[in-house]
Image (cartoon, rainbow, N blue to C red; front, side):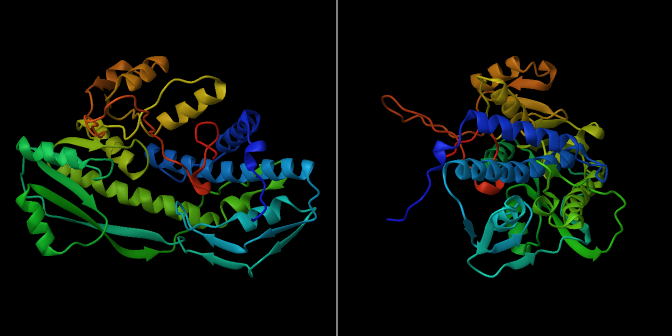
Length: 365
């Protein structure tokens, strides 16, 4: 039997309240002036929140453990891989070495600094097979979260679908998709260039500890990553201008998918946001803050938002979201469970990893 410390004895609502409060202070001091699109800025804030919460969580947990146990030495894996928005990003060793100055920290393996190079700004081109003057087009941001249902609806109702793909696809696949009235927009990287970025990301301090190295590891890499995301998004402005797209549909209101709604609305195109999840009420101030932040990815100010359930409708009323931007649609993309018999419990939650952890709203088991 391997001895371990059960973290549930240290994780409580007070801990989550402190994590949430400290994270909010850091996000408010962030600088997104190097970006143009609000959707990409929101994506950056989400990434910053993930990294900050995970680090502050570790800080408070270690502090509580040290209060109840005599800790003379801390062992870490030694892994130190840096990757943005990636499950393969390992940074616990770096964090522990930064926040535990008074205790010896020993790595099991030799620390290997593996940093993916995002520092070059990428340029892209678009390859499109949409016929000139084609009518009845619906742009679909991606095919995740059951958005294949939108494809089926479009085909049955004599609409053609347009979907973005971020890699080259072969000619035969294009022909196959064309048969079902599906046109693809391929986004292909053309070259990388070094660019002097005048904006400076601020250093991040917590409890007088400089966490900048833990969070950014390389500030230029972080800025370049989100600038490249924005460069992809801005390519679609010409696509939306040149083609008679009747509707732009997305299942997220932030990041690249959210930017399609933002750009579409700026061009006076019809936009529809079909949230990929739902939200309920809250029981305390921390829960309210959590739900409001989650709603940033579910409700868009650049589109009509589909209300697919009574729960979502009640959430919209409780948070007083502008009714003119919402439409009660019933279930559009969620799964149907018509064969359920007897009493059932719906567990509709995604367990989060350490790299995308948030305070209050997610399970800690």
